[in-house]
Every structure is written in structure tokens, then in C-alpha cells.
Image 1 (cartoon, protein in one colour):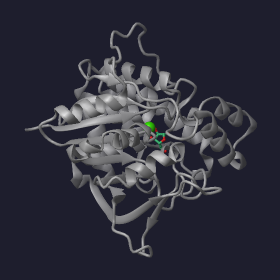
Image 2: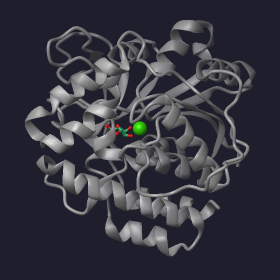
Image 3: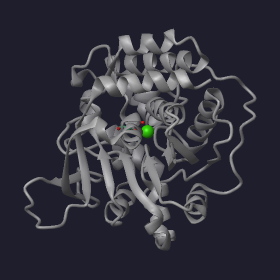
Length: 342
Ligand code: BDR
Ligand code: CA
């Protein structure tokens, strides 16, 4: 069967790790490149984490190119301050300190992938070109259209769209993890990836490229429990053990830091949803075509994905917003893919 060509743009991140495992282990995708972006952690750390994960799961030939530290318009530092302010009511003093050092520390720890020690001296190296150039190269050289799967802030993809508009027809679809239409986590309508780089998000959503959005509306419905993590561990291969250790850490962080969600011993695996829908679109059981705009100049809501349910704006639908997926099949797919890796 012909594989679907994809570029994965990520900021690992525990759920980004699972997105990479799913993409590689599914055997349905041809991963032409992995590009990295700052988000859950600094660009140095997310890039190191991507290299570590890919090497560990056996994806040694997948090229990795490094992206940018700062969002397109704002600074990484300013983003951290906004995030700390956004959740100040729900954080302890200790959590506030951790959050003020690293953007995604509360969920992913100080390395961005706390909970597992990868071997030192990883032979896998980054490519000599930057993420945006790598994406452009893949698109240019591809005979078929390529699907882009962003699982971090949209900085690289936004820059790609601005720098190489001639390559837009080569993009099949952007299947992204980000946004939310109603879910309240940090602030109403706010999700981490779109909050970090609102301007990039706006560029992407206005690009005219078909977009499928896997936001909090769906990713907090599709939850992974202890049983699935146990199944991964029981696979007995090194990927299964690594994934299980990291997901246990992620679950613990949700138990501890996201009490307002009333989740117990379950974890979302946000980013893997955007990969799963490309592998098998029939996993999506509920979605709506909506016009979605991005707030970039508000007092509270920069980065919010404004989903026009009622068509009040009278503007054409630009995004397929996903609301539900077949959770048991999704979780089975994760376990099976981990089993196909090293
Ligand atoms: C998104 O933010 C990060 O914490 C995750 O990796 C995911 O991409 C969820 O809001
Ligand atoms: Ca991510």
C-alpha cells in the first residue's frame, strides 16, 4: 500500500513523542521530515528530544531540522509571562516558579520529556538546513502533495506559508493539534499551541490550505488510562517501555497540576490525535466545517480560535473542527504502533 507523505512539526513533549511513535510505527505514513519548534520547551531541548525519540524507536533515517526559538512576532519570554499570568489563580507558588522557567514545565517537566532517560551520545544529528527550508525542500521535491502535521506552536508553518506561497498547492492538508472552541483550561477558548504563537496561527488559518483542527474539544475526550499504558509496557520492546514510562509521568502531571479538570489517572495524548486522523480518517466520529478566526490583539484572548458555529460572520468555512474520535480504536492503534517500533 502506498504510504501517505507527511512532515511532522513538533515540540516534544510527551504527547509529541507519542505522535512520533504512532506515525513511525503505523507503517502507513512516509515521514519525509521531522521539524522542531520551541513550545513545550526551548528549541534546543525540543530538538534534542525529537532526535532522542526518533533514534530510540528506530527511525534513524528520518531527517530532523531545527526551527525557531521565538514566535514570529512575540518573544518566548513574553509568552512565558503571559502563560504564568493566565493560570495564576490555579497555580501554587511552587508551580508558578516552575512555569516561569520553562513554558511547558508544568505538564512536561524541565527537560520537556521528564520521566525517562535516553542513552547519551545519540548518533542522530540535525540537518544542516533550518526547519522552514527543510519543509520547503520536501514540498518542492515531492511528486505528490504532502500533509503537514503540526503538533506544536505554528511558528515554522506560518513562516513557511509566508516565505514560500508558491508551495501552498503542494500541501495536501494541515492536520494540526491546537485550538479549542469551548474548552476551559488556561482561560476560556485558549489552548497552549495557539496561545504561544497567535500570529503564526492566524497566518496558517487564513492560508486557504485545508485544515483539520484537533483541539481540546476532542483531545480531552480521547483519554488514555492506566490499562493502555500497561499494555504498552507489556509489549516488551524498548519503545513500549519508553512510551509507558513517559505516559505515566504525563498522567501524574495531569493528576497533580490540572486538578481543575477533574481527571484522575487518565491522560490526554493531544498530539497523537492529529496523526491518527491522517492514518485513518474514519477514526473521526464527529466534526464540523466552521469558519475559525484567530484573536491576535485582545486583552485576554490572544491565540484564541474563534469558531463561528452559527455562521454569524457569514464567512466561508476554513477549518474542519474535530469533536470526537473512536477512543478504543485510537488507543489500540497507539499500542500496535509502539509494538512495530524498536
Ligand atoms: C499541546 O500543548 C503541549 O503541551 C502538547 O504537546 C500539545 O501539543 C496541548 O495543548
Ligand atoms: Ca506538542
